[in-house]
Length: 201
Image 1 (cartoon, rainbow, N blue to C red):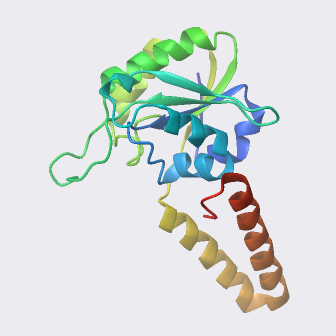
Image 2: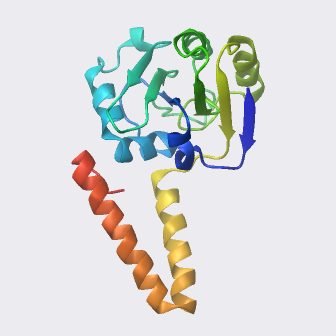
């Protein structure tokens, strides 16, 4: 298992045989890495929607998402759903489900090049304890060439604000370049909407 720190996995998914996506039982995929995958690779979201909404039996299962010409993803169901009261329960990761998913990955993708964020640690995937998660990874992954990307995932708003701030800085120095950036961003957003049919960002 190799760790890469501070680099967003999304820019590298095409380099691997399979990319793992930690998610919940309600097909929300609303923030972080899940959101990036959902809006750019709609075949993953389509597969998620085919699973039974809110079904506890999904915990600890893996659903492979394939489409010709697109990267392969594997949905890993590792948390029940949303954390409505983070003041009362910060850690909502299902550790048993994470372990079952990783054991399945170890068998299903033996000898394959696999990548994932540090599943379950992000506040969008379970906000789990890093030490516990690392122990599960190290114990369960033995036969897969796994690269784990350890970085802070951002909410939809945070991702958009990051782009907005970067564009604003360019506008102050080079208005022409700024308008080119905005045009490119809007073109990419329209292309995403054309592909997924429901979201630009």
